[in-house]
Image (cartoon, rainbow, N blue to C red):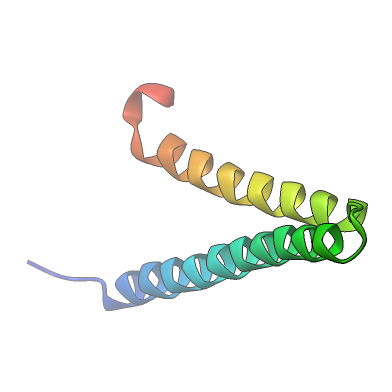
Length: 77
C-alpha cells in the first residue's frame, strides 16, 4: 500500500486554512452584531453597517458549509 504524502499534506493545509478563514469571518459577523448592540445602547439607534457586515459574514459562512455538504453527499453530484 502506497500513501501519497503530498496529497495528504495538501488536504490538511487546505482544511486548516478554510477552517481558520470561516472562524475569522464568523468572528467578523459577531463583531457586526456587537456594533449594532453598542449603537442601540448608546443612542437607541441601529448601526446599518454592522447589520450588513453581520449578514454578509454569516451568509458567507453558510455558503461554505453548504458547499462542504455538497462535496460530501454523493447524491448531489
